[in-house]
Image (cartoon, rainbow, N blue to C red):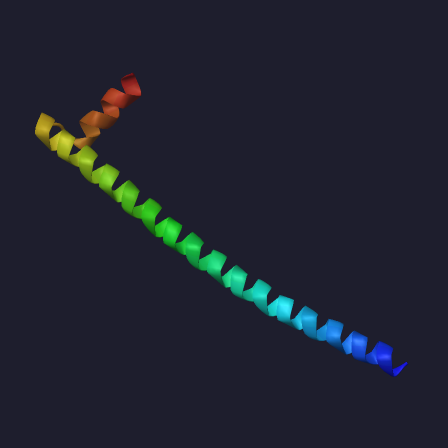
Length: 72
């Protein structure tokens, strides 16, 4: 009976260790997703800046560009 109790305790300790590793991995995934979102936001911002620069270069307003897109 004592052997079984020790084995159960050992298993409980292993489960706790794995739970800790899972928690750390989940935090890492959360951090990576946040970094990914930041990069996506920067990418979108750059694309909008490029679009705005092209519109300025062409002498068009954003309303004119929207109208052209709608009519396409």
